[in-house]
Length: 104
Image 1 (cartoon, rainbow, N blue to C red):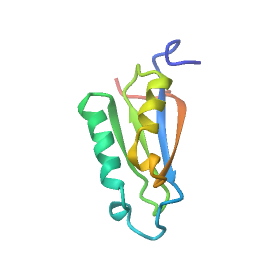
Image 2: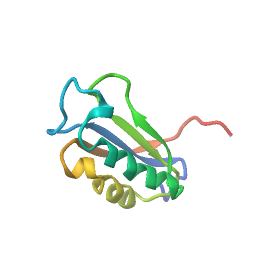
Image 3: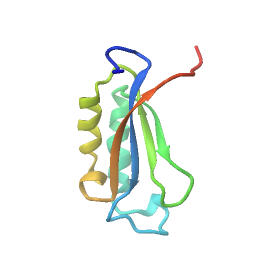
Image 4: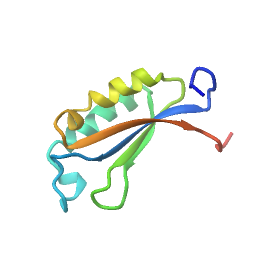
C-alpha cells in the first residue's frame, strides 16, 4: 500500500541516537541538536510537518510526522539532509505508517 494509492498512508521519520550522541547528556544539550530543530522548524514553516519531537525516555530518539501527501522520496531527502543525521548525532529511518484512527 502506497501513499499515492491510499491517502491514509504517511511516511514517518524515526530518529535514534547515532555514534556522535553523548549518552547521559540531555537531548537539549547535545552538540548539533539546535541545527536539527531548525531543519524541522523550516519543514513545519513550509506546512510539511504536522508534529514531531523527542521521546521522553532518555537517549532514545524521537519522531516526526509529516503532513499527508508527501512522497517517500521527498521525506527521505528531507530526513537525510538533517544536519544532525549528516554529523552522526542521529540515525534516521523512514517508515510507511497507515493512519487507522484519527479525528474528523
